[in-house]
Amino acid sequence: MIEDNPTYANLMLSISQNKAEFTWCKTLSEVAQVIEKERFDIYLLDLYLPDGHSIEFCRTINTPQKTDSITVLITGESDLEWRLRAFEAGAENYIQKNIKQDALKIKLDSLFNYQADRLLALKSAQAESKKHLDQSVRSQLDHNALVHFYRQCLNLNNIDKIERHLASLMQSWHLNYIARFTLTDGTEYHFKAHNEAICEMELELFNELNANGPNVQSFGNSSYFRYKQAELIVKNMPKDSYSRGSLID
Image 1 (cartoon, rainbow, N blue to C red):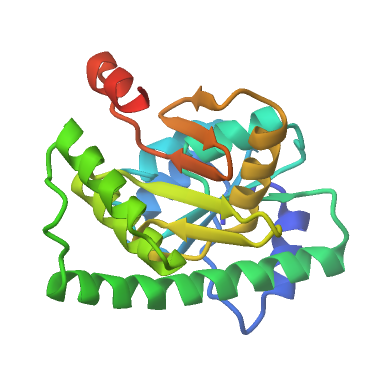
Image 2: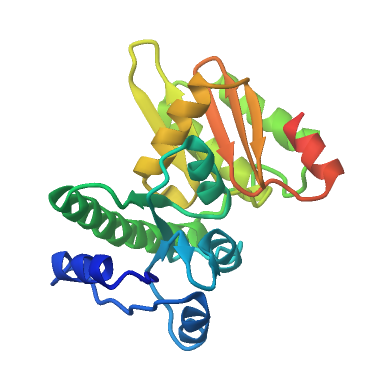
């Protein structure tokens, strides 16, 4: 936890007893020294700190190699712009400071349970992928892979097959993704890289991007796509303009 307000920090410590072991830092420079020696399951980052802005720090620790930790912003900001900035920097969720104590406890408990379940699923998915790596989709970013995926979809009669084919395609391109399919009866299916569960912040992003913009939207290194009842967020779009443009097309 990186929080310079002792009152708020002590509140979070007190309501999280028996749920998690905390290391509490008050500045970004302090935590930079700590993470050189220790690894953490969750990073709780106050948005505004005495020696900097935690959005940039969030971006530095959320590298493509990071899989087992999650980052959560603690903020008084509530605008969509800030959630997009946090998401683009790699944060999986956020906590608003103005919520009541009982709501904060529920939020933290949910966060701890989510990460515990996520780590178990990640461990299982990694073990499974070593046994059954899908070789049906080519590894390079080309039209053949997409055409193959399209042909697979034409033969689908089971929602689980969509998940397997989508995971195979995205894995071949090394893309970190979240997908949402909404059936005509309103039933939603969520698919995420590494077979993880979708979190509250990601659901809110889908809802707001669906309601407030065009079918293709880009923010930072992420892009959102919508076609009829299918939605996709790719978190790590290529940085070079040619590959990025080709993939968006």
